[in-house]
Length: 138
Image 1 (cartoon, rainbow, N blue to C red):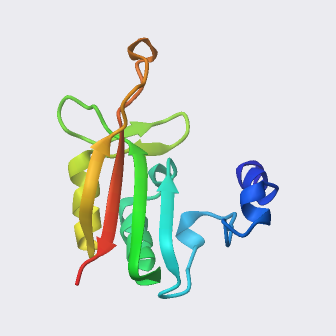
Image 2 (cartoon, helix red, strand yellow; image 1 turned 90 degrees about the horizontal axis):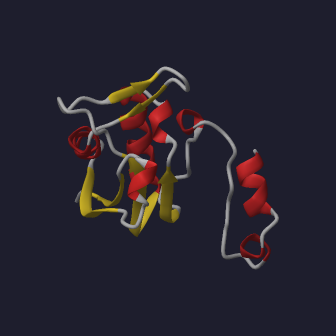
């Protein structure tokens, strides 16, 4: 709630640039079909199981307009064996690039573009962050 409250009180919301704001778990969001030009998901899919995430991506695919796009921005696993990484402190999973791409495909989403975010200070030892731009497959 504290995060969505910031945007609710912003100029972007008052001027109509930002539309609907939902404060709920992604597993509980069932968007209206063919409604959204953009769905942006950032730093939150790590709290869903793979099955929940695939189902979420399917619902998002169905919610996009004909020209709509979905952006997913997430940390990326750096496990040397190519495995997802589980964080016991917050019960989240950081997935590999390969796992996310598989889930996108299984959900009927086509990858339009993908790139790593640059500019993080190296001394912070942060996980890589990757953006994915997706459209429904035809």
